[in-house]
Amino acid sequence: MERFMNLINKERVIIAGGGASGLVAAITAARRGFEVLILEKQDRVGKKILATGNGRCNYTNINISGYNFYGKNREIIENVVKEFPPERIVGFFKELGIQEYIDNTGKIYPNSLQSSSILDVLRLECRYLGVKEICTSEVKEIIKKNDSFIIKTTDKTYTCDKVIAAFGGRASPQLCSSGSGYPILESLGHSVNHIFPGLVQLKLDSNYLKRISGIKVEGNITAYSDGTEIKKDSGEILFTNYGISGPPILQLSRHCVDSIEKNRDVVISLDIFPKYEKNELFALIENRFVKMKYKTIRESFIGLIHKTLVDVVLMEAGIKDKDLPGTKFRTKEIYRIVNVLKDWKFKVLGPYYWEHAQVTAGGIDTRDIHPSTMESKLIKGLYIIGEIMDVDGDCGGYNLHWAWSTGYAAGRSL
Ligand SMILES: Cc1cc2nc3c(=O)[nH]c(=O)nc-3n(C[C@H](O)[C@H](O)[C@H](O)COP(=O)(O)OP(=O)(O)OC[C@H]3O[C@@H](n4cnc5c(N)ncnc54)[C@H](O)[C@@H]3O)c2cc1C
Image 1 (cartoon, rainbow, N blue to C red):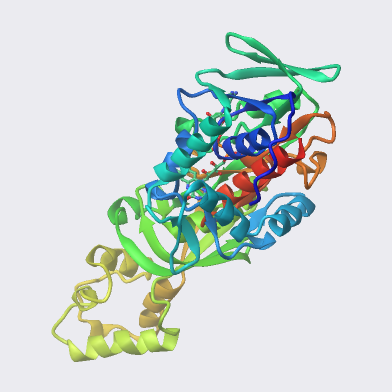
Image 2: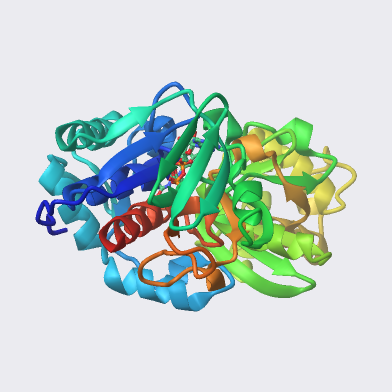
């Protein structure tokens, strides 16, 4: 992204929240000559950035389209995606010293594979531009008075000409986002669309979870809401003692949770033999029974699926006597086993805790935010950016992409 000319500008901007979006907004505003102060609740800025991408920071993705983002107002999503293609974000960071590394799925990381590199370059640029930051300073209230703003923190009051609300959402409160920004913006007239955890593990209704907790399988997963397919994904799935986790689960989760919040019945179906059609899997199993007549049905699955899954799969298929030889079982019983392996259904009870969610779905209604400047349509001089908005993205660098893009859009529009 282009560097702005450093205009002489004495206007004072306060950024409430020094996370991903706030830091980029600070840099962009400071480059334009604004006097910028970041007020950050934590003892240092950008703490969450350090935890992103398993410590590697998946900061954007080469494949970005409006379909990767969710929220009630499509206009703002399409606008931001069009204005901020991935190469703009990569260019912005390259200028700060980040060489990109693109993995084989299109996810983009810093070449150092260290999220601290991203935070370091943002902080160095802020320091170079003279951005001031005050940490351990929680914004409690924003008041608009004539043409300026009064910002009240836990212990001080500040005044400024413009405010950027970069509070983040509610996901992973242990990493700083407690949701404190929502009531502050509500008191200024903004409305909050119902929030719920996104990119989160799912709680399942199943008696077998304790037994199979810790087992990983590769497979396809399909989510249904009231019987209608809502989303599909594939990859490594991990059973846990409360339900299910793994990248494809995170990807499906916001769709499942959204439906549950609307009182719909949500079921996920696992296909742990995605490379086999049902008839092929039937033939494979039947063949094992015939070839290894001396084995019980339980024993004949050893080497085909995880040993701990064998009993559970057989129970789920209604096979009571697991010590009979496989050859004693008939076609319909083998088909019942095939059905469990290819279409194992679990009722979804809900999301795991906010502490485990990577993003907040829902948030500040973006119909009240200008789609290219991020300025509030209700309060002149107030800008709203990042995860606090009613926009969330898929897993894969999309949420940081949103944070950087909206931060930049606000900073250049002040
Ligand atoms: C574990 C984890 C891993 C993730 N990995 C990725 C990834 O690899 N790729 C990706 O694209 N996304 C990832 N995300 C999501 C991404 O980190 C967020 O969507 C993004 O950081 C949101 O940026 P933000 O600036 O809106 O909010 P945040 O980064 O949460 O920043 C908000 C800041 O505001 C501060 N704050 C809050 N309230 C106040 C207040 N009242 N006063 C002052 N300061 C306040 C907070 O302390 C925080 O520093 C991950 C999230 C988590 C939890």
